[in-house]
Structure formats: C-alpha cells, structure tokens
Image 1 (cartoon, rainbow, N blue to C red):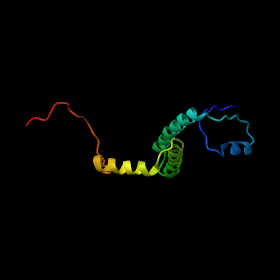
Image 2 (cartoon, rainbow, N blue to C red):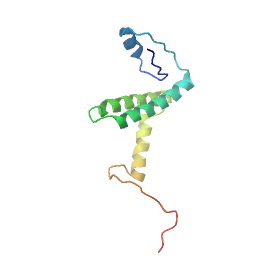
Image 3 (cartoon, rainbow, N blue to C red):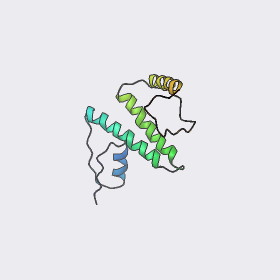
Length: 112
C-alpha cells in the first residue's frame, strides 16, 4: 500500500526508509520551491507542537527549532538580528506571561 507525502523531509529519512526494505521515490526541490516547502514545514511543525502531549512537546519543539534554523540559513537571515528584534518587540508590546485574552475592541473613542 502506497502512502503519499509530497513534503519536505529530513536528510537521513531516505536511508531510514531504505533500511526498512520499503520502496520510495524522492526528488530535490529547486531553490524557490525549497523555500516554500520550508515555510510549509514550519507551519506543520507548529501544528505538531500544538497537538503534542506534554511528554512529546520537547521533541516537537526541537523539530520546530531545526526548521527555524534552516530558514535562517536559507533565507540568509541573522539569528542575532532576529533575537534583537524579538527583544525590541517584547519591550514595546510585552510577552505572553500575563495570560491575557483580548475579547473585543470598540472602535469608538473613550468618552470623558
């Protein structure tokens, strides 16, 4: 029975599949498709973090971090600049530790 994936995989997955005795087909992404696949993988990993149990959340966060680091490399970004921007945004907008949920905003100005 064939299972279709059509997604970005880790570099050693073909070896793992081959050692299991299964038949498979892979191809290599071109540059633009690879960037798009990385962004799709970021979303996939984020969903896996969201859906993971407490026992597996560290594994899923590690996968998410792997994708994050690859995106930084492939998009020629600076982790240091991203962290600096993160700190700036934290100073300006805060973090998420207060557990605040925005329920609504009225577009009318406050009265008096």
